[in-house]
Image (cartoon, rainbow, N blue to C red; front, side):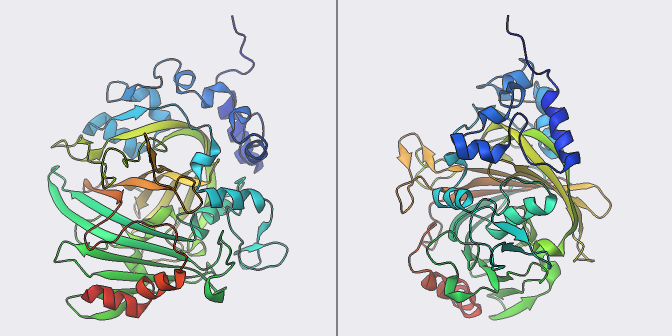
Length: 463
């Protein structure tokens, strides 16, 4: 007989004590020193938060499928919309063994920078993240790997969304009507070019220390939306609102949109807002009352969701659930031992329809694994449910420029639970127009000139 050293609720109590004391992650040992020493986190946690079988007292094990029949056993590991999707709308998820190798939770260069720069960040007097020794903009990787406050958690998400200096995502979006029927299918190309908080050899892109990133999105299909383009240059100062420029082919000109456009659909039928990006789509100091409200284990879609071997364009084409069996993509999920749960309010947007957001952040890599918003009345509104992981499936490996597997988001559900509209975003290899996903380009100036200026979005709109 094995005598348990820790009772079943030991982790829950210790995590809540850490919240009250303002401490970082870990139950038996601090998370990031454990990662640095061993490359994984098993010694930081007891079995109850590293084994789904122990956590559910034997009711669920690796290889099982969660359905309405057994979802009650994992209710405490899901956001409320996810629980409703399974219990009422026919969603199913398969459980896999947890990721142990921390290199599978980051792009290689980003993890190296996080380890190298550990302990070198601070908030300055303006509330912006700087390198403590110099006061200059952040130098790459997660500035606060051991998250102790809500601001630290949001900063990790905000400064480098995709964890690459440059990312270009070919996205195929399938929108689903409330009755479960297909609504729209869009192809769009999303570009992120960081000018600071970089991991590469160039500390700043073109010396732009006052900027954080240039972000653009360009629709290529269907024909009636092809050419619609948006550009959002971000200042490094997180108190400043980014401008939003848009090119709409029917008007044949670039126009500037108000800040509240961040809370509107980009095109008809889609549930994605600019504000939703990475759960940190707005400058962090335009939100406030940010705080950690909990630490807990959670289920997340990490490795095992990339479709590079089974589909030539990487699409997740397996669907189920909803009124017509097409509302949800097949997902594989695993137990994450500890998340920080962060709440924040849009204090800089008095006319925003969002009243609050709630984010579950994996303490191991500081990435969002679940995100919901509430409307101004306090009612739950929308869920953003992402899958992340290395681009590996079977014998297929999409490698980066150094020979390591690329790492990125794989797919996303964005569910407006109030209207029951769903957007299914697939991170694919290529979209119409020949635009391909890419996470490295030695000529970043060419990327900037083609996708990240006002004249660029006008040219893209007329192609």
